[in-house]
Image (cartoon, rainbow, N blue to C red; front, side, top):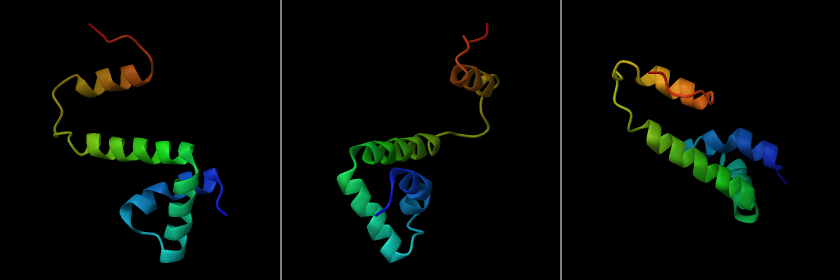
Length: 77
């Protein structure tokens, strides 16, 4: 049986459909029984969806504000 650590390492490949069938099934089973890993999968899917909406190039200053926010710093200016 896979452990949570194993599943988190395989989540991206799972989402991309890049796992062999037996491994995919083992990960899928783990998601069925583990609420914490299901929540992680949901976060990964939301992150992928949000990142897919970013339009490049970014407006000036956007990247700096995002990095500062992620670092827990107040916005500049």
